[in-house]
Length: 140
Image (cartoon, rainbow, N blue to C red; front, side):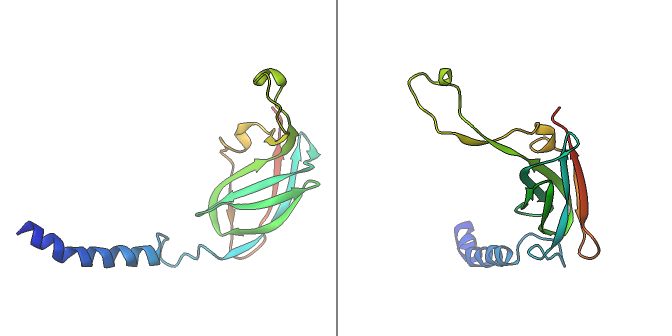
């Protein structure tokens, strides 16, 4: 009897799963793909950050906005969420890291984790009004 019941329920469950997949997991009325202008400045120890990236993590995939000469200007999804800031430089691991191997320089984040992987920084991107931010990052 239970095998017959599970065979009858399989199409219902498959249809339900398909509907959920199509509808997504967002809240009712939430437009997760619509983005709004964001801009601002980023300083490192009081000086404009030469280049890097600001990650707005409001919903789903983070919106990444490049920083150039301490300024950023881009688009992000509306909502309140975490903000991560990264700055990169090209670095080559020291030869003693793996003797006998030659490494190519790689892009390495040099900001402390408190500004990115361990951030407590939050902001709200609004659907209307100015979304202007000033981030004052420190190297310590």
